[in-house]
Amino acid sequence: MIDRATAVETVLRKLAKLPVGHAVDLRTYKRNRSVVIRRAGDDDFDVVENGFHKERFRVDAAKMKKLLKTLLKREFPRSTKIRLYDLGQAEADTDIQRKKI
Image (cartoon, rainbow, N blue to C red; front, side, top):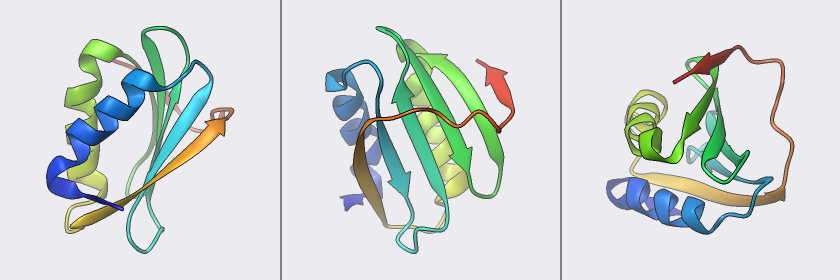
């Protein structure tokens, strides 16, 4: 579990070290909402939001910080602690609508 105040920096540090094809999962304390981030390429990430909104994004590393802040504010509005799981080699969900950012 990580503190929400330092979550953006912690996740960005984790993503910088993440190999291509591996993913991390951010969940609320109750585990009912999630944000899954999968490294698709050297500079590309697939982000799947599953909670209040169900959306899928394809974003590069430069725009990841802004998207992550937005998603944390939208999906974890009252959470003080966030669960961070390393999923290892993972496939992204294909049934959620994709948005290009």
